[in-house]
Length: 92
Image (cartoon, rainbow, N blue to C red; front, side, top):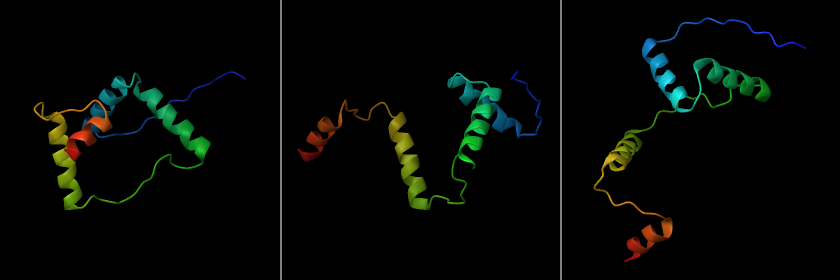
């Protein structure tokens, strides 16, 4: 059976598209390939292949996430090569 393709058009926020293009490019994908992956996974699983929820992090969680991002970007924060090394320092 020969493969055939169909064109699909839809509107998307320009900023969201630009962000998605950057992400997919970093993953070695283009928009078409990313959507094909999504559609194949949805068909395979018979559902949207991820949870769609209205769960919003509370203020404490948002604060913790922002702190984690700040720490991750801070070059003065000590880094560890493995968990044992970090635990040893915590216990001392």
